[in-house]
Image 1 (tube, rainbow, N blue to C red):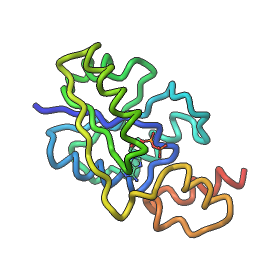
Image 2: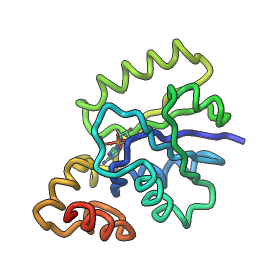
Image 3: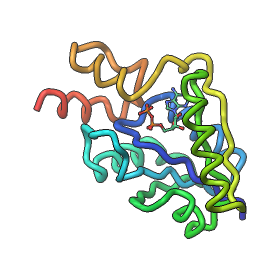
Length: 159
Ligand code: ADP
């Protein structure tokens, strides 16, 4: 079994994330989408809410499981028997930090590889931050996030 982990804050999941999930799920037997609970970012959605939104979005993928961790990513990957960590790259601006993380992780856990997947050109501009900003001003979200979670975002923003 070839398992991989796709970590992130997913606050909330976007069509850019979903594109990476779809492509990675075709390469690996099992893909764990892992909501990192200890991110330094102050999230809008709780960890449970983020997991629930991802679950509804990936329901039709047979080999994708939603998961969470507040541990060191590579330690968690080892527990899941995943030898690969997937990272999406949107632009060179993502690269510096992700490259540093990949090198640090390699020192801690040499058996785990970080695999970078280039964002689909269609979504290189897209981030969870853009989605939250658009939602605040009442923009139509269907170009940005899976339709299953549009109401969750509107509800949260209007709270
Ligand atoms: P964000 O930067 O939007 O808050 P996350 O921390 O949730 O993103 O990102 C999780 C992973 O998904 C990271 O590897 C990130 O580079 C990747 N990612 C985020 N948005 C996109 C996108 N539009 N296309 C490809 N990969 C993406």
